[in-house]
Length: 278
Ligand SMILES: NC(=O)c1ccc[n+]([C@@H]2O[C@H](COP(=O)([O-])OP(=O)(O)OC[C@H]3O[C@@H](n4cnc5c(N)ncnc54)[C@H](O)[C@@H]3O)[C@@H](O)[C@H]2O)c1
Image 1 (cartoon, helix red, strand yellow):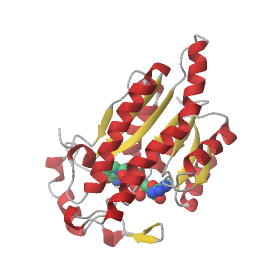
Image 2 (cartoon, rainbow, N blue to C red):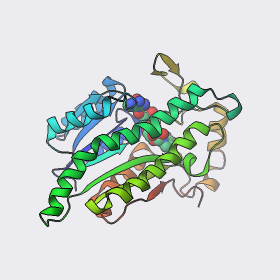
Image 3 (cartoon, helix red, strand yellow):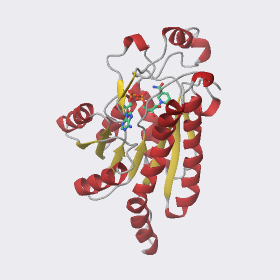
Image 4 (cartoon, protein in one colour):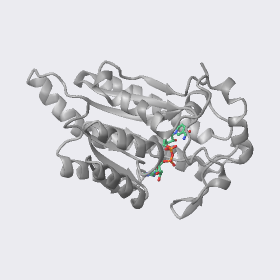
C-alpha cells in the first residue's frame, strides 16, 4: 500500500510510534524512525530491516527548533522524497491547574503543538513542490499527507492535563488549517485522537522503568495508581470494546488515515477509542 513512499514518524522508538513504523514498513514504506532516545530508535529501525523492510533511525528532539530541517534532509538524503509525516512524539507531565508551573505548561505545549507546527513547516517544500509539479503536468496527485496525533484529553479535557489537553486540541486546529491550505495540492492532513492505549504513558508511575529526561529535568511518566484504578474500573461500561487498545491497534488508526484509501479524507479527527465516549 505504501510502495515507493517515504514515511517519517516522530517518537517511533517506543509505543504507538514504533508500532506504526513496523506496520508502515510491512506495507512497503521506507520509514524514518525518529526518537528523542537514539537506542530505541535504532532498535525499531533494526527490527524493520531484520524483517526485510527499509528504515533508518534519526535521533533528536522534535522541540529543538533546528531539528525539523535536519530530519527532512536526512529523509531526503536516504530515500529521495517524503510522502507522509506523522507527528506522534510526546509525553505527559500532569498536575492540577492550581499547582501547574509555567515550565510544566510550556514544555508540554512545545512538544505537542509547537513541534508539529515546525515539522509541518519544514516538510512543506518536500510535499508541496512535487505536488505542484504533478498539478502543472496534469498528472494525478501521489499520496501525500500529514497525520497528527491528538487525544481524547484534547477533545473533552481531562483532570490534571490542562497543558496536554490545550496542546492536543491545538493540534486539531493545526490539522484543519493545513487541510484547508494544502488541499488544492491534494495534500491531506488528519488527526487521530487516542483514548486509552496500553503504553508506558498509561502505566502507573510505580511501574516505570525509567524517567524521561528533558532539558536536564527527569520527569516520571505514567499516572498515579489511583487514577489507573479509576481507568480500569467498569471498563466494560465505559469502553464498548471493553479494554485498552494495544499500541498496534492504535497505530492502525494512523496508518489508515495515511493510506491512499483515505485519499478523500482530510481535516478529520479520527477517534481511536474502542468506542469510549460515544
Ligand atoms: N498511550 C495513550 O493512552 C495515549 C492516548 C492519547 C494520545 N497519546 C499520544 O500518542 C503519542 C505516542 O505516545 P505513546 O503512548 O506511544 O507513548 P510512549 O512513551 O510509549 O512513546 C512516545 C515516544 O515519543 C518519544 N518522545 C518524547 N518526546 C520526544 C521529543 N521531544 N522528540 C522526539 N521523541 C520524543 C519518547 O522517547 C517515546 O519513545 C503521544 O503523542 C501521546 O500523547 C497516547
